[in-house]
Each structure stands twice: as structure tokens, then as C-alpha cells.
Length: 400
Image (cartoon, rainbow, N blue to C red; front, top):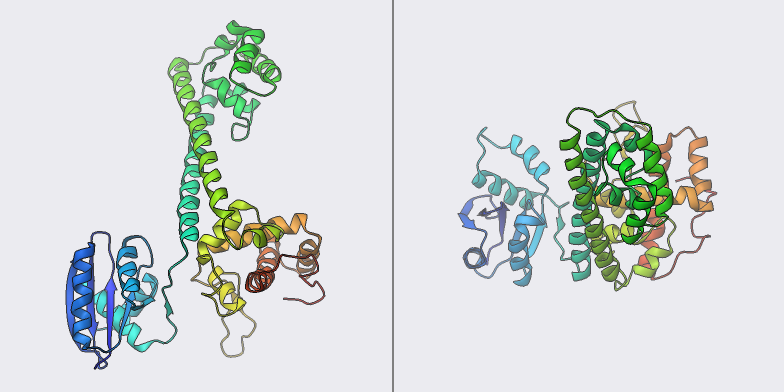
């Protein structure tokens, strides 16, 4: 029996797999389609080379295009390590030759898995966490689309009717968007009049339609000049307003899906008890961690993955030189940072800790990161012990 290391340079349509032995000799190299049949054949061929020995697999993608290959390996009881693409890129500089091919990258991945002991295995997340990750990512895309559409709406409206553009916050006021689907020009609003607009808005279910109509008529009475291109711009404003309303509905539907799935998770009540966490941020936290703390041996490791643990850059006489880590999970950092920022406003204990960090000379961002790091210890312990948060959990008498 022999031990082999198999590296997979994952791609969208094809992967390249290279297997090496204990001496680093290349025993297997094959380009395979991202297809179940071909992947299973590749796995079988590599296992046959090992002749019953252990095979350690490594890949540079732990999601997306590499998901099927990882799923098949896990289903076949194989150990899979994750090597970030950035690590592979930097490691390639230490290997002979300047050329770059998928076969070379796969060989580097296999060789790094053979030599290194700090690589972490790929662990399958629970079904709810995977669904939360998919829905949270979709919600983020929809929110970004809505923001872009609102920016286009305001820019177009500003070009011919600046008073109406400044009258409402279209990111918050749904009724203003409903108004723009029918009334977009000063003369059109004046011709319709306040009573007719109020009646129409009320039929559309707009709250306090009388105040909205009054504000619209006031803006129309302040502009009697028709700007060139007004007709085309007004048509675009109406279409964009309808688009933003559709996006709002889609976001609400996705948020309902997220809430329904989040409520079924075993950590739901615990996370919601922690100040600063609502359904959305708690769902993002579960999605980023895989829905379990079993992946993290201690809170320090969780803080390192989240990017809230400072990394020392000491050399010679220079000490105490700390920087943000270069590698971290941006989704997890977002959930930890935003929840800490909310807690610093609404939770007395967190606010006291934040104020103390500001008094020590840290700026707002540094103080929030320090609070987020402190909260990681609490969150990890709560989830480990299955306990809800109590306000006495975070001591403020000891610096982080």
C-alpha cells in the first residue's frame, strides 16, 4: 500500500487532476470534464493507483465549479483539503519554470498538500446553511440591482425635474415609486391635480396618499419649464420605477424564504439573543460558518477566519506591529462587523466596551473590529454550550 496526494485544479467546465507519491513523483495526470461520470472514473483510477493506501485530495475551489467533485469525494469517504487560489499562486513562484498550465497548478496543489500541515479539510455544511448561503447571496444581488436602478432613476429624474428628485427618498418611500409609474412630469402632475392623484394612490394601497400627492403637486408648481428630452426621460423614469418596485417584491420574497429556513436552525434563537443580530445577519453568519462550530477548534480560529484578529508583523526591534489579515472570509467579516456596529449603539455593555476603545485612541473602525473580536469569544461559547445571551456575558473590565 502507498500513500498518494491528488491535486485538483478546479474550473467551470473541466478540472485537471495530478497525483504524486511520497517522493513527489507524478503518477497520474488527467483533464476531466466537470461531469459525474468522468469524475467518478478519475477518482476510481487514482484510488487504484494507491492500491488500498490512503489518498489525500486537495483542491483550490471549495464551492462553485468544484462543488460536484468535492461532493463525490466526500460521498466516497475521501479526505479533501482546501488550498486557496492565492496560496497556489504564491507557491508557484517557488517551482521551476515560468509557464502556467492547469497540469502544473494541479501538481503544485498536490505537492503543497504533501508538504504542509496547516491546510484545513473541506467539511460539508448542513442543508439549511447551504440554502441560507444561496438565498443570502441572491438577496445581495437583488439589493445591488435595486440600488443601481434607484441611482439611474434619480439621475434621469434630476435631468428634467430636479424638484421631484429631491422631494422623496426613493430607496425608502414605496409610495413615491408608485407615483412615478404614472406621473413623472410637472405638467402631468399639475393637470391631474391633488385630488385625482390622491384617489389613484389610495387605490394602489399607498399609505398617507394625500400627503404624498400634496408634496408632488407642490414640486410641480415650482417648475413650469419643459426641459429638452423630457418625454423620453419621463418614459424611462416610469419603467425604472416599475422595475424598482418589482425588485422590492423579489427582495421581500427572498427575505421570507431566508426567515423561514433560519427559524428551523438549531442556532436561530441563540444568535437572535445576541445584540446586533437580526435574521439577515444571523443567516449570513450561519451561511459563512457552515451552520456549526465544529469546524473551528477554538474562538481564535473563528476570529482568524472572520478577519477580526490582528496579525503581528514584528521584525527585529519592531514589535507590536499589528495588521489586518490578508486572508479571511468576507461574508463572515461582514456579519461580525455589522452586528458589532449595531450592538455598539443599542447594547449598553457593547457600547461601554466601544467607548473604552475609543478612549484608548482607536478610531471608529478599529474600535468596532475590537468589539467584533470580543464578541467572537461570546458567540463561539454560546453556540458551543447551547445557551442564550445574557447581558452580563461580555465583561468590560478587561481589555481585549
